[in-house]
Structures are given as structure tokens and as C-alpha cells.
View 1: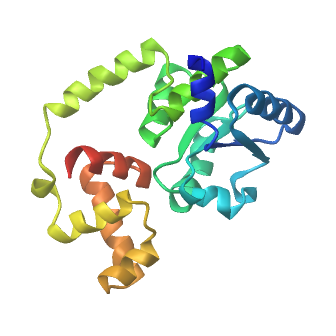
View 2 (view 1 turned 180 degrees about the vertical axis):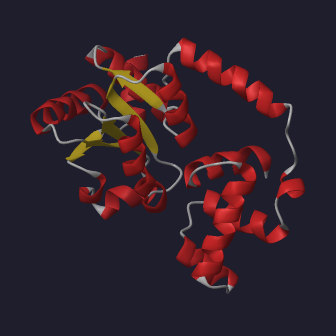
Length: 224
């Protein structure tokens, strides 16, 4: 079996959800990706139309491909806020039809975006990028990645242990958030109110300087 066939077999238990209003384009993209990768592809005009079974994944990693055509980054990130409350950390987000500049790309990375596919990218490049993302790699340009690495070096110089930043209860709640557990279930497990959980989560995000649950989970993996 060739390396490419091995890659295709390894992706057969994954799924891709293409989100955007351009039905014909997205249908053709879905057909191509299913043929090239073996990944099951579905489509939705917006995140609210994605079936709950897909959002939850049921153990199957899902890549959400978000169409950025004629959409400002601020508008897109506002849409993506829903993503964090509805999906486990094992899922990925990538953007296609991207026209963002490097500064916008940095903001998107901070939100947890794993890859960017630009308007002039070939279908072969998109396929290669999707395989990389499912392998837990970032699919970004060298320019963007270099800038990010330099920024991370500055962050590492200011590194603190989690116990220096968070209370014992906050670390407990963060570990549950990182496991993909929703606020209501966290409340039940810890015998506290959902409102108290939300307050703790808000304080955690503020203390560790992250904007959402996905970034909090990534921070927890490195620091807890």
C-alpha cells in the first residue's frame, strides 16, 4: 500500500463540514475532497444549520472549513464564537477563500484557526493542507509562522506555572473545559451552579489571556 493510500485510509474515520452560502462551489469542493481523501463531507450555509451529531463528533474529529469569500475577519470571528460552546477541542477550524493580510491571520490563529486556504490555492494544495491539519499540524505560510514563533518566544519569557496564576478550583474547571465538557455538566460534577461555572470560566480566560475554550484547552495542555 502506497503512502498516499495509507493517508487516505487514516482519514476515513474523519469528517469535513464546509460552511458557507455558495452551494454549488461547496458541493463541488465536497465531492472532490471525498474522492481525494476518503473523508465524509457535509455542507451547511452557516454553523447553526450543522447537525448536532456533527458538532459533537461522537469521537470522530471534524474539520470545519469556513468560507471567507467577501467576509471581513471581524464578522467571521463573531460567527466563530458559537463554535467554542458547541464543539469539543478535538475539532479543527480552517478558512478558505482567504484574502486576509498577515495581521488578520495572526488574530485568526489566536482564535484557534488551524489553517488558511487562499483564493488562488489549487485543489491539490487544499487536499495537502487538510491532511496536514488532521495530522495536528498548522497549515499557514512561512511568513505568518515566523511571526508567530517570534511572538511565542516573547510569551515564554514571561511564563508562569498554572498554580501561580489559577486557584485550585480554577485549575480543576480548566481541566474539565480542556476535556470538552460543557458548563452544565461541569456544574453537576462539582455540585455548583452553572452561573458559578461561567464566572470561573470567565476569570480563567482573563487570567491566562485566551479568548475561547479551544485556546484555553491548548493552554491547559501546555501548562497544567
